Amino acid sequence: MSQDLFQAPDYYQLDDLLTDEHKLVRDAAREWVKREVSPIIEDYAQKAEFPTQIIKGLAEIGAFGPYIPEEYGGAGLDQISYGLIMQEIERGDSGVRSTASVQSSLVMYPIWKYGNEAQCQKYLPKLASGEFMGCFGLTEPDHGSNPSGMVTNFKDKGDHYLLNGAKMWISNAPFADIAVVWAKDESGRIHGLVVERGMEGFTTPTTHNKWSLRASATGELIFDNVKVPKENLLPKKSGLGAPLGCLDSARFGIAWGAIGAAMDCYDTALRYSKERMQFGKPIGAFQLQQKKLAEMITEITKAQLLAWRLGVLRNEGKATSAQISMAKRNNVDMALKITREARQMLGGMGITGEYSIMRHMMNLESVITYEGTHDIHLLITGLDVTGLNAFK
Ligand code: TGC
Ligand code: FAD
Image (cartoon, rainbow, N blue to C red; front, side, top):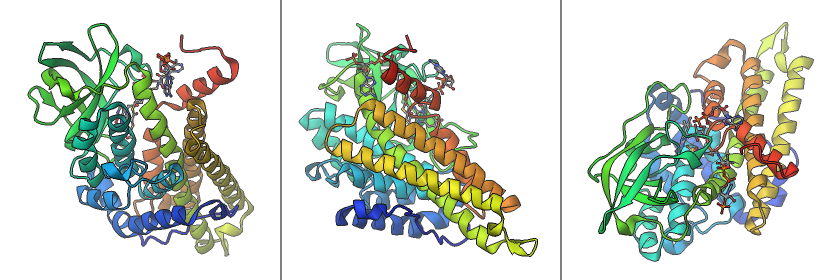
């Protein structure tokens, strides 16, 4: 990939809305991505491999549990700092942001919120430092958008639980040390269990042949009569609302992350449009190319404002699940549209790995699908504004 010349657009002086701490955290993540992610990410995406050597650096910039209290090894930051870190990481690559999202919002968050003190002490500091990596198993082969239909289940065997079933499309699964797994008890109630690598009957086959999120490891979780110690059940919350609560946190991070991918594509296309000459002029002088750039910066600015306001609401404990859902849908859709426009602006060069645009475009096809598809989020907003449930 060419040298990383990224300059972040800030058309509405949004920096004025950030505290010094926000800017410090954001700039540290931005510099780290330039130094550690940009030079290697294209190669890893081509090889379809997650660059495990960046795990330590991700921990150091606070990407693992940004808002988890410092007593558990987290960074103790607010929600806007969390969002800014996700934005900067996804500016580098959505797959790397996925790893950070899963670790923070889908593994550390449920242990912190639904686990007991012993579970927090046992897992959180190691997850924050990257010594342990985690994954989150909700989706099943026959239950994606409709997780309440899950069939993975566990039975009480006196001194342990016996877990059976399978999860698929699980980010980080191939290398995770632990999995937060959602399964039904004998009465059909959903609970979270921490399953550890090495437990007999637990395997994590890798998913191959992805054209998207190639630098993120995806796999299955197979449970064949796995004996899970009783102390591994997360005791403080059960029901579908428990995993969906984790998704709120992860979707919030994605709403910010997608802005990063969009900013990278806009910045690349803007620079290219001033350098690439056709018909004796830089292509940026043509009205059709200016229209594309004008629309991109407008949409990025709107998305930045949406994310920032949502961050304020989250900090105040006032953001609703439906508000988070709207931001996830809008910002990912915005980013995907920008990748397509930016790709065209680079002509043939846009399809090569010399530039990050095509990689972002392919990555965002997963991002618009996971954590609730675009259509599911439309229906969540539809339900919220009409009071009429299209799912039932
Ligand atoms: P429904 O009857 O609406 O709700 C069941 C219970 O859950 C509560 N609830 C929520 N709680 C917290 N946060 C939310 N966002 C919530 N949404 C609903 C609800 O109040 C209810 O509670 P209670 O106490 O009354 O029981 O459930 P439903 O079965 O009708 O489903 C609703 C629907 C379709 C919106 C939901 O299931 C959904 O969001 N589906 C999409 C599935 C999804 O997002 N899967 C993501 C898997 S993880 C992933 O993709 C990770 S990618 C990671 C990466 O690499 O970055
Ligand atoms: P389906 O639910 O089968 O949906 C297929 C289509 O039908 C979609 O267009 C959908 O919008 C539409 N549809 C479904 N229901 C309705 C409806 N009621 N009305 C209208 N349209 C509807 N899951 C995890 O648990 N953990 C992970 O770490 C994880 N990581 C992932 C990583 C990647 C790369 C990918 C691609 C997925 C990951 N997922 C993960 C799974 C992801 O959350 C699901 O793919 C997603 O929720 C959609 O489920 P599905 O693929 O089964 O699609």
